[in-house]
Image (cartoon, rainbow, N blue to C red; front, side, top):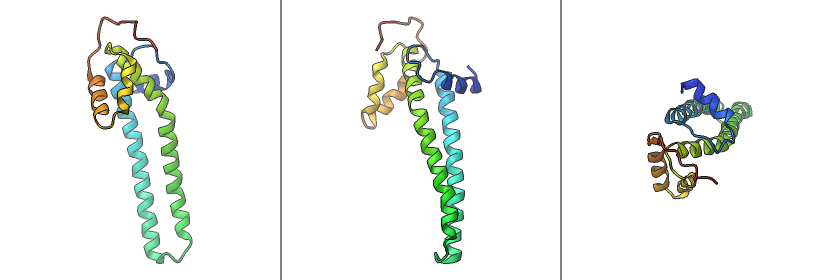
Length: 139
């Protein structure tokens, strides 16, 4: 699966918890989301620098700081909304990836274990595709 096709599939299979997802589909989506969040952070850092520069020039006495802080807060809100919108499709993709590596979808609950659970899920996401797909792993 290609880079752009994986991201399109991520949104098309928004709540598809039953199929399988290859490693490339999962890792390309992780890369897409990392790039998008990094762009959000770059814009926030630029706006934060502008806000600090404006505050230092005016000694905080002018209300113009509100006009530079507003766009920064708006971008942070957009970033939060993007993260919220990606939550369910990411869960769906992880369940499909677990199915593809012939693991139970319930292993996704390991992510609730602090620190260690995330590492275990990372290892599971890296496992190769299993050819013998067992259909007994249903919700």
